[in-house]
Image (cartoon, rainbow, N blue to C red):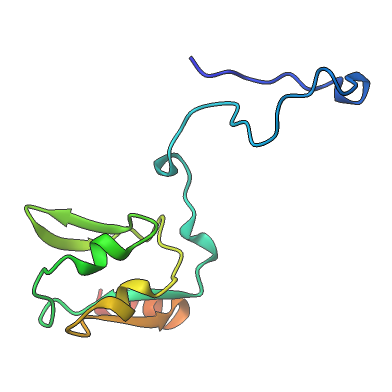
Length: 111
């Protein structure tokens, strides 16, 4: 069970009652928080160029590269922050960084 802090009277606490710094009051993972909303660029995968080497998977600091059955299945845009590391490490240039606006427009045109 996760610990919930009651800090309504924090101004009265004094130094002895404060929790140590960097304490996380409840457990969770990044899966619990969508962090891709402030991205300005997004990676766009060209499946024809990709050979599923998985270098992008190991390099992604946000675990946003989705893999299914040993093959690159896509990008988790709910968590991708648009850092571009995947595009930089791809030996086949299968990832291209595009502006979020342009990528969304291209997606809409395909549907």
